[in-house]
Length: 483
Ligand SMILES: NC(=O)c1ccc[n+]([C@@H]2O[C@H](COP(=O)([O-])OP(=O)(O)OC[C@H]3O[C@@H](n4cnc5c(N)ncnc54)[C@H](O)[C@@H]3O)[C@@H](O)[C@H]2O)c1
Ligand SMILES: O=S(=O)(O)c1ccc(CO)cc1
Image (cartoon, rainbow, N blue to C red; front, side, top):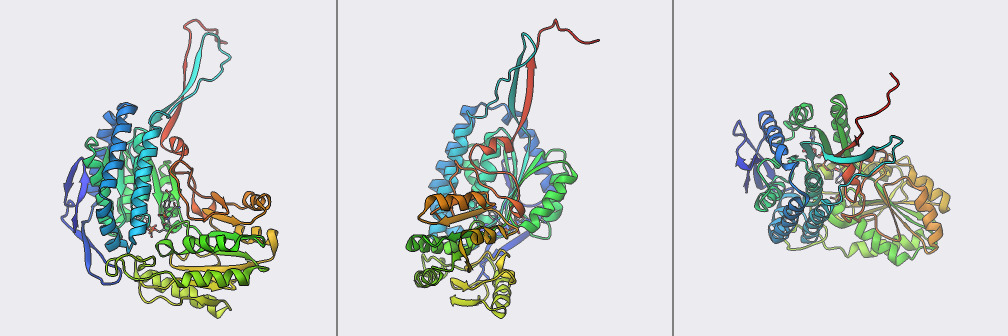
């Protein structure tokens, strides 16, 4: 597959005609040849977004809603194409890819529904004969940067919410999924979005820092949203701060599932298997820590291992559908093997699975993990999870909070009041009582605390993220001033 840049409604090669390849993580075959954007291309994209903003900001809510609803329909109609390209580029199972398209269509529909909800309020004023109110106005061109893992949905949310608020977008896709991200831009084009309202760029990793610099420092780009690693998020936040531009950061996670001593163990095991291994654990809200009360830990671990061993593994491009496909790259395997070795050396026990070979790794469970091991709080982002045994409720809370991250979490316990108490005490952006850490609904706010970043996607929170709040008064000509 060959993909181009999409700027001002035109698909084109990069200004220096260079491209880069995305290769299949296991076979090494070239899957996508992608136009490699230059700084000049980025500047052109920002200018196109600025030009388009002049008219898009004035488009009425009904028309914005109609267009976003159309995007949702177009995306759904292309589900087979998404499944094919996501399998090749990121090793996604049909389940993960299909779920992504479903979530993406929901994001566009939810965004569409917000079109008429971008409202201000009237404010009581001490001034006679005066009307005091607030308005929410579009901000301007937004830079949206997305990763490869929730390939469709994370791009969808980075595009749909800024657009419904009347902004235009420069979308910088991931070098791991250029074909999937281009397909999203095609959906918006096919739905009939005006020229320049969405612009799509991709680049090889060596070019990304300069492109990000050029865009963040440009006078056109007004706000930034970034979904990706905490390492790169920190760089983006620093650049944004230098130019005093607000950013929304959705970064790494180490989501805990707490299993209290009165938990329904079978239910907790189902949530643990799903949350740990869907898409090879490469989901920011993947269950990376099982904090299990020592009284029930042996029974929980035995059942968890038994169910995990039954997961089908393979390459969705070769074997048809399977739950555990390859990771995004062989680097992931090397990194996780290092964490695994460190933990084993310090006393952890592999109770299921084992080392990765390149990008291929079996579903792996590591028991008896303790705070001195790197894997205790380092994001693995692969098909491996750890069991940390705790001594009661207070210890579970302490361990869950002993993390630099704060994205998603779950608490299993039959005494719902106690589980709620635990849920209220842990510092995460979302807590699911008797549910998996992996959950997302477009109508609920999504984001984290601490090194997971700040700001929220989804729900009504996006209205604040992507609008300027203005105080407006209408006053009588005749007024008393002190001098
Ligand atoms: N909190 C969330 O909602 C959420 C969702 C999905 C993934 N994530 C996190 O994302 C990470 C995995 O994604 P990834 O490997 O693609 O992350 P990444 O940080 O390497 O890349 C994310 C994006 O940033 C771009 N990028 C990389 N270096 C850059 C630079 N110097 N300047 C500008 N752009 C740059 C990439 O091309 C990509 O588009 C994990 O840590 C995961 O937890 C978070
Ligand atoms: O599975 S992920 O790609 O990490 C993911 C993250 C966030 C959301 C919420 O929009 C959906 C999927």
